[in-house]
Length: 163
Image: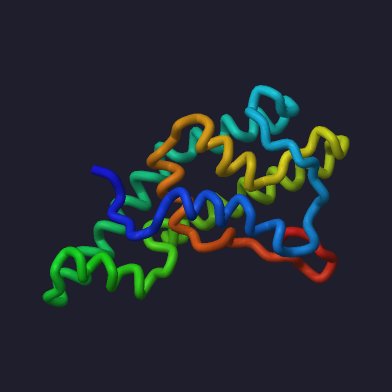
């Protein structure tokens, strides 16, 4: 059964792919947004490792989210009301489970670290590796989960570095 969400996945993809362009900072990256096969080996391997995490994190987020909805139903809400109430309490829905937030942060920061080791033209934006390549791979369930996030759970430190 797919995740019970209330967001538009296509809009979520657009939002997350474009959000990092709204801020200044982070490691400069090329404009490459092509397929994973055209990327540097380190980034291809990182994407492969990232994908292997989803068979664990997706069911974990799904179980946690079902529990959040059930807790709202126990308060006497209908299923639809319970889903909306669960979102009111956790604005990223099933993507708000702390372990999934950690997973996303971990791979974003790993991508950034690898980008720092590569020539500029070989660098790939973390949002491309972590979202666009999932879309390209046809990972619809995983894309649905990650696009529950209204924004990437990262920031910039005083030096303009991802943190």
